[in-house]
Length: 238
Image 1: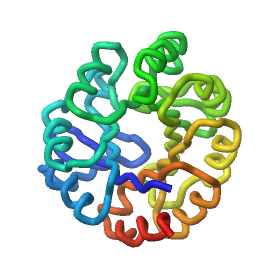
Image 2: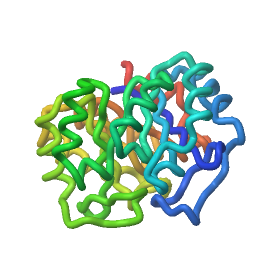
Image 3: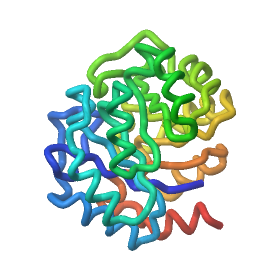
Image 4: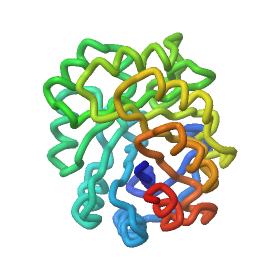
């Protein structure tokens, strides 16, 4: 199972939110590229980038920061946040990211999302962000009636790189991931599933690994020193 440190970008800075709430922001650094180098020096081989401004505004915003991270980190990166048109996908890929993450539009326009997956096979992940089992969209500011499990089953038919599943209620709260929901979703589809949200301890990581997940995104727990990245990577590599 791969460990992906999260770098969330807002206003060109590295931040973390609680439960996706823009009013509950903690700034962890003014130089996201330096933060990326820090995680790579500790063994990271893949980084998870989120353009929080882009997620809210519906188009890429923090392109300069993304480019600097890609150029200076020297490892593969995936990017989500505000990628709602084909031109946005092409723009993000031109920055050098390995793959992009589609969220809101995968729910609102699945036919378009499927077309993009077939146009960019293996370069697109679908981000399924759920609150109480229902998919949240538009920067987590709106809830839909679509169940996360049903959306995952539909998207799994496309040539995806992965599904990234986030339980918003756990994100940034340091209360542990929703193991049961994540395991249920992973068991329901054949594509790789990456867990996100609430990972706080090495035991959380061990439990997710036992569920057969492809990867695990870690954010606040790394920034606050609750998880040692080297130890997490060693745990998943053994």
